[in-house]
Length: 207
Image (cartoon, rainbow, N blue to C red; front, side, top):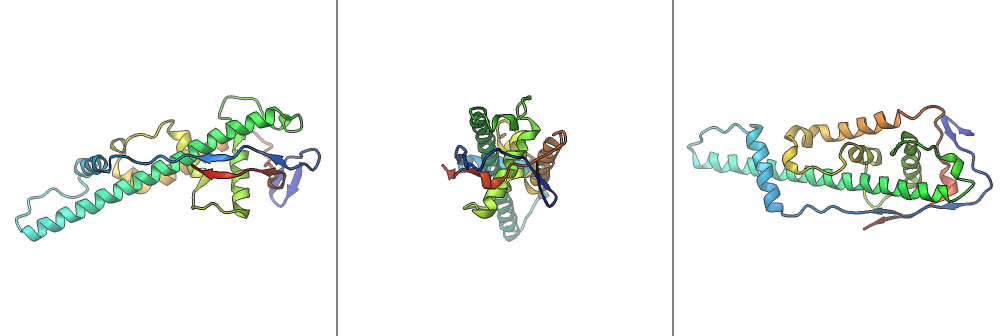
């Protein structure tokens, strides 16, 4: 085990650079924006985000409708962000599966994996490896990798927008995702060691 500062890295025999499968990031475009806006408006009405009081002044009514439209657009935007982040997490878990296959086929890498119920918390080492590699070669778009994996661990399939409250989309989304990831990764028994980033290479491809 190699120790660098506060981090521990597994020892890999030899000095070979190991090629891992590319991370293929699939997009999940939101279709039927008109239907999405209608459901977002239903959320606003059911949650009483805007008090549904009678307004007699046409100008005030116009302002009231504009504010509701802005909030509905904001909800849809937050949901699209959720879907995009979830798709990253789903792609990362699929990439980890492919990396497992690569490790299993190589005698010098096979001992590094623990056999357990998928997705085992020790697989967080691949998420940390991805974070390490993207520090040297930044992603084309900012993404919270741990939060993305946390969302995928929480939702096997992304729920429709009608399943969410406005509070979740506005405030609770990121905190829930981070909590899910750290709870999952914290289940890994000691010792916890990372994969040395200088020994691995892979590409990140946005589909």
